[in-house]
Image 1 (cartoon, rainbow over the protein chains, first blue to last red):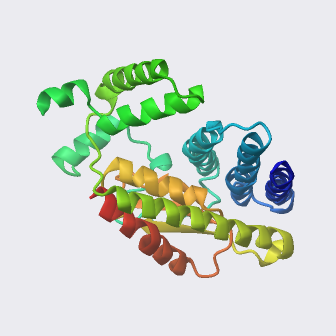
Image 2 (image 1 turned 60 degrees about the horizontal axis):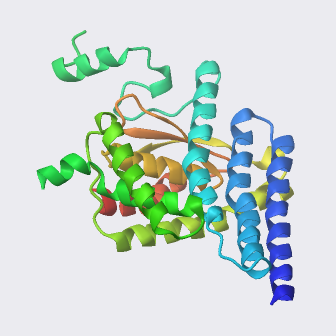
Length: 132
Length: 165
């Protein structure tokens, strides 16, 4: 049992490490900031996921108890990683609004970062129509 | 029912917080169940002014299927993006901005969709349009942006429509 546990732990650690490495390599290789943003979202999902599965197996096979902290870490990562990515992207759009060519926001006025109205004005416009 | 709602504004959140507290303790005991439940009552009560509406989730089975689909997609997309980073030349990558029209209207559903898009590698959700009808997404490699939009709508948004609305 201990042997198999060790082997499985090692496999998952190596797989997780490889994905983390590829994510970091992507940071060097890719050129523009928006493409680089894709690398960390990768590392948090499969890279960290592999290490957490390895930790689960280790605590079960070697230390002999079921640990659920890893599931919590996964949950918290899945909740927080998209927020970080969203705010990095918003900051990028805000600072490079002239040289990024964004697609049309459909039937709406503009993208939310580039909206200079206050929330009060937006609510007023929605309530009383578009006549300033 | 209304009295129940007054003390438990978000019943699901109460259950979830109790479970999270138990998992943090990492060991079952009735003391932690009671303390977790106290937290589960107190926290939704305090945040109720900031979260007045209650998301209506239709069936747990559909939620489980959605989670399974997303985890499977995370695996597949991770391998795809790893391949693109390692073996494709940087000039051959075609990053693209796409604008995904949203049929979802509840904030909770849109948040879930945006988080899903970011978690599946290769796409990052970047912004919402000012009135919330479109989602701005950046793709690492999208030779055909319309196909990516269609995939997001078919795979995720239609499922979330069934769950939330």
